[in-house]
Each structure stands twice: as structure tokens, then as C-alpha cells.
Image 1: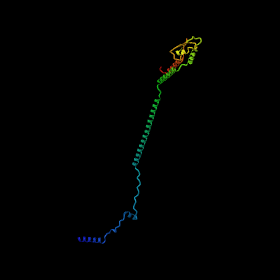
Image 2: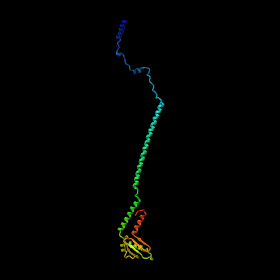
Image 3: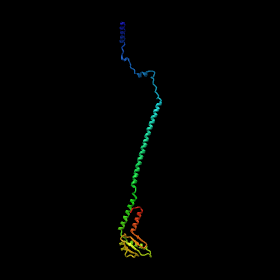
Image 4: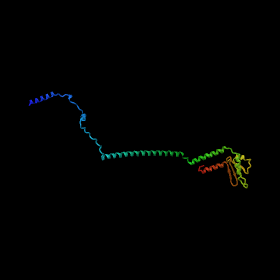
Length: 220
């Protein structure tokens, strides 16, 4: 048996030495080139169509759309509330400014204002009366007008005047007795008759002014 094994090995060695394998005898062909040389084309796998959405996918898409709608609604509501709040603040500020303007334009209490006007008018009148010289012609006209009120059948009366005025009219032709009265203001005439008295002049005007002011409710 060992002899047979030696003979087989010797035969294989002789075959190997008789036909040596060289690298030039072996050609490398790429797989792509082999496919192109093949008469049968390579099978191409067909494209898969997208799978139809399932009920779960539709429900999830609907839920996502609803959430986006709610978020947009909340955002718009927030913007609307912010605009309304800003409008209220602006209106409140406008009312505050209007109230301040009305307070600034409100008149002073009528009593105080009337008292101030009365005091001012009276002071100015008395100042004018004290500074303006009495016109002799005006005084004579007043005296004659008062004396003319006495009827012919009336008992002659007396005419009271300021002492300076009495001196001025001393030479005047008047049908009454002239009496100097220091209580009267210059320019005033007071005629005494049997039935009463008649007064004309500055004091009368001042008394009328006081009466008007009293009618306005001004405390004297």
C-alpha cells in the first residue's frame, strides 16, 4: 500500500512539473464586464409604490392639524386681548387728561368771586369819586333838578350839601335853604320837604351799587 501511495505522489509531481501555471495565462475579468457580456440582461428589481396611509396615520395627522388650529386660535385671541387692553389704557388716560382740564377750567366759588368783584368795583368807584374834582355846573344842575321837584304850593324845604358844595352854591338863585352837611359826599344833594326827602348824587349811586350787590347774594 505504501508503494502505491509513493507512485501517486510521483505522478502528481510529474504532472505539475510538466505544465507549470503562469500568471499571464490567467485573465481577471470584472463582474460588471461579465454582466455586460452576458446575453441575458441582469434582472432589475421593480420600484415599490408608497403604502396607503392607515387609519392610525390619518388619526395622527388629524390630531396634529387640530393642535395647530388650537395654537393659532390662542395666538389670535391673545393678540386681540392685547389690543383691547391697550385701547382701554389709552381711553383711561384720555379721560384722566380730560378730568384734569375740567378741574383747571372750573370757576371759583360764586360767593368768593362775587365778593371780589364787588370789593373791586366799590374801591374803584370811591377812588374815582375821591380823585375827580366836582364840576360846579354839574352840581348846580343837580340842585336845580332837585328843587324843581317841589311844587309851588309846597312849603319851601332845605337842601343839604357838602360844606364845600354849599359854599359853591351860596350865590346861586335856589328856592330852598342851603345847609352844609359834612356827612354827605362832595357832589351829593339831599332835599328835605314836608313829605320826605329827595337825594341825588354819588352817595345815591353807591347805595344803588350796594343794593345790586346785595341782590347778587354778596355779604356786605
